[in-house]
Image (cartoon, rainbow, N blue to C red):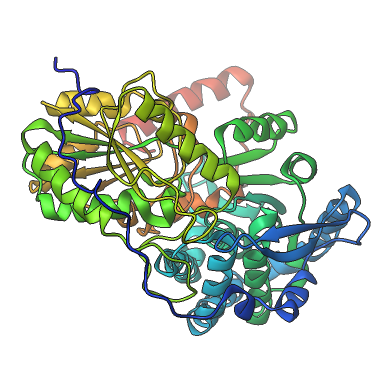
Length: 544
């Protein structure tokens, strides 16, 4: 078997110059996110003021963005109390009336998307096109559950214990109050996208978004209330994860968490101790496979989206890229050239191909992974440096070749615009290497033969696999489940699983004429003989 982890003889395309700056334009962060907007949105936080405040920054400039109230344990308790008081009346509404709120939200969102695009960019630093991906994802989920919730939640007839005498119905009841903890990297999609099915299933939600990106979640709540959601049904609390997060988990009837694998384990343990269910979307070290028969131009273009959308701060983005040795040189020349041409910028307008990282911590991790790899012998094919001339947290999209297992970037999640290149000779090698990780969130396969692509996809241990796409095809298929295997999580969002996780299954069975027990003069033995004959007959007649 060929060693696919080391072959540093790749072309050095992309190393000559810096990524160009995107043309200027658009409003500044200060002009878009004014003190009046911040004050209005901050009123949506459940906080009495005793826990103090926290400042957020604008990643594009490094300047203070907002001062937001924090929630203490008393505030979290009050949020759950208010949510529990309001939830029964909300659950009592017909499903179609709850679904109508989602459809009105959908329309309002598309009409007023520029407001939330400004907020997403201001809080995360991502390019506007990547912020729009969040709008697309949320609108798609709102439309899907607005149209399909009644079907997902309807009562279903099931086979009874005794045909003709027993009827059974499976019903779906809301959990009650869902505790949701959402991260900073996709603040709109990962707060609203998970809340949508919870609401239409009849639940209330207490959401703890990351404080850095709380304005986006608060804007979404405000728009949902305008669409008809009772204000008490969506409570938002803010605070440090280790302080406020456990308070949310300790009170919830179900927990929806998106974040790191380490924190996800802690959430799962706390939920399990209370016998409360949880869904967890966690980390990933996602792989893309470029097979020998791939369309190299299309694959190179797709790899740019796969690796550098939202500056790589995307759980389902690609950090490991496996290329068939016979096409590696041609593919890398195309990929590196496209990567080096990406325009970096931070205006609140379309035009930039990539924005900035969100925090100094992310910048430090990215820089450390690249520097350690280069010192240990890896080759930079594109990028490989910070861009303080554009802003405090910009880092160029980076391609590393010659990465070995001893390097941190090989196995650790970087969560930034860095991808490592590896070569392979057979599909078996590529599949084995892609699966050689405890994670299993997303993967991507590129080939002209879609039948072959599906066959390779079936062997990959990831919750989603995209053939000839990076991540959007699977994630955007909102009728299908999305989630991770292994250390990438538990449970699924989207589709039937994404809404049924927020419900309890209840069976209601009605018995007619005769009981299931000795009656009409039958003694125990006669009853047993009668039912033995009946069980044999049900099998013979293929009754289920």
